[in-house]
Amino acid sequence: MISLTLLLSAVVPVFAEETSVSVNITGGSEASQNCVLSKSCYDPTTIDVPPKTIVTWTNIDSTAHTVTSGEPSENNTGVVFDSDMMAPQATYSFIFLSPGTYNYFCSIHPWMTGEVIVASPLTTNSSNNATTPEFGPTAILVFIISVFSAIFVAKNRLVFRF
Image 1 (cartoon, rainbow, N blue to C red):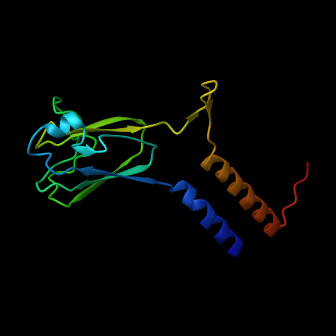
Image 2: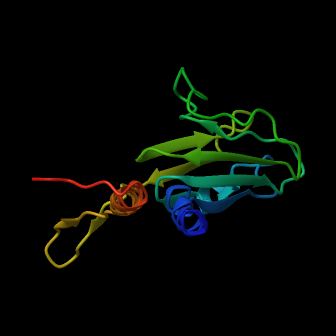
Image 3: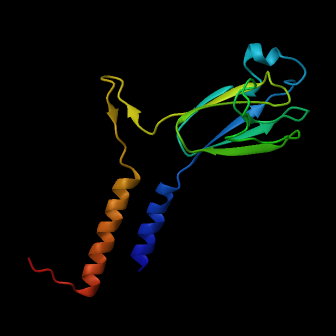
């Protein structure tokens, strides 16, 4: 039973792997649209992340802001995520699970825009542009099932006749 516990403690973190990325809402973003030209309203403005990434925005400005999915010109913003008003020094986090491009903005100061690009978990081989599958959790799951089956058969002294 101890070996089973050790095996599970080594495998469970593989299924729960998450990456964390921070984005700052920069100071002075509310005062003018200068941050648009320098692309610094959200720092960084664009981030590329793998699925299962937790993105945390921190408002380091002296006024309230939001992190709202979509673009200011859209009618249905905030459908994917919406921080509501974030006071100075407040944080907001969201886990991006699915690949895609997620635009966001501040609903109070719509010139403040950013983008999260969630890349597919497949990697690309640059020499021939072929994709290489990552077995990851599937291979480990097959291994676990094999180990449990072997333990079950050995414990119950099952004999199979062919």
